[in-house]
Length: 458
Image (cartoon, rainbow, N blue to C red; front, top):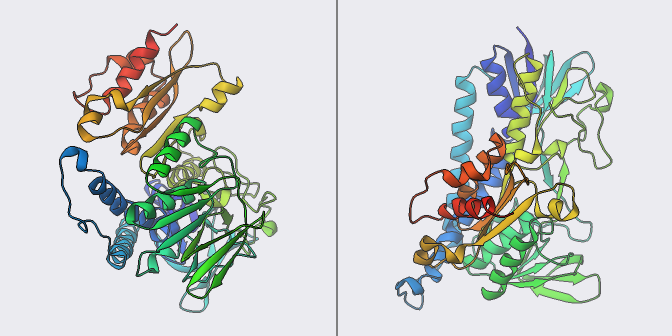
């Protein structure tokens, strides 16, 4: 029986454990903080639970067009109750995942593991003492943590990382968010909807510089309409706590004052003190573990998955990397990871979902593709729901009409991207997508309509 040791209980780790157990391996999962990892305990599950409340608040605040009349103080958010629910749901999800893993026959060791020569894994146990495992196959899935700037040290009260916001008992009166990537944009959007006065400090020309430019412009327009301030081309040089507030000093000398500051300036891999060098496992200049498309590292019998690899920091990608590693290591059928089939979502309001090739790749000539963009404002269901912002965009190859990518900007775009994701994964054509029945009226009808328009475009 193959002995598998997994370091880290996040999606990359626990999904790998489930696959390895299913394939008959003897599996040990070394977990320090709780099965589910930061995805469940401090990142994805908590943030999206907070954003779920923000969505309800947004719907209520913007429902007057639908004939819903609210009193002057009808929509108010109790952040203490919101965060209590966030923590309760995160703990419950971790417990459910733990039970699933244990039912599969996986042994869970509570502690911090590291690799050692001789196919060994050494564990510093949470309750004291050490344990030593012998592993034919090892998977490192230790994740990442928020990047901290020297002149913006979090204190957990006024200067916060995204892992620390769930201890707040009162809504920030004026929240300064530093960083306009996905994490910064999501929290800025969420806290604005909850009722905070939000200032988003962006070092780039626009928010979400890595996302579709048309989508980012829609979001910036919505931010402006909702009173959220974006300071573009502004880099934070320092953040200091002053009394019951904070002062953010920008690189050009300007200052921004607020009651709280949320730092969202990237992640650092948890790859220190893991024995990687001793076991021949290479890392890049930033400390991320180098892996191939089946999650192999340069170390014999060592695989890696998730944020510690820096491949694409999504829970879905971490899970697939972990599964792929075990399929490959244990001799099952495996297909190399293809990032061009990964669907991703930004949980702002509206949401931004993408899959496949991007507009930037088309514009640069990296891929030859045709595109069509259909505004949601023309969709009957969108009109009924009072939705004015957003669109569906499709890309297909000329000649064959094979769908190679798409963008959806809409409420619940994370759900609407699925038919496009299926089309990309299965190499369906716009003709096939156009001929599929959709419910009338429905937002998904715009996906089929975009395909019909692209089908007839020369």
